[in-house]
Image 1 (cartoon, rainbow, N blue to C red):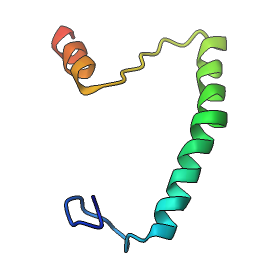
Image 2 (image 1 turned 180 degrees about the vertical axis):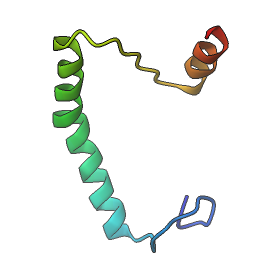
Image 3 (image 1 turned 30 degrees about the vertical axis):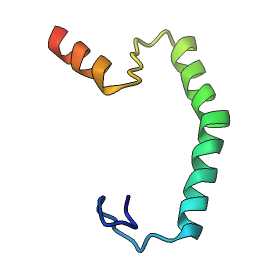
Image 4 (image 1 turned 180 degrees about the horizontal axis):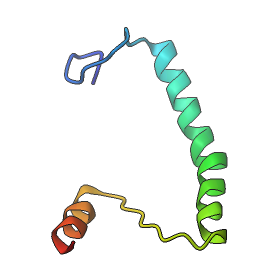
Length: 63
């Protein structure tokens, strides 16, 4: 999207940067995200995970 000029980028988008971002995201999903969610469960913190815009709009309209 950034390479095509559809989405603004604060840096020069390159394939190398894309690969770094892809690797970071994969690592976050596999390692960090489960740890964060586990901390929420252990501390009995109230949390809500919204996975798509439709559910977000639904939640906002109910609040």
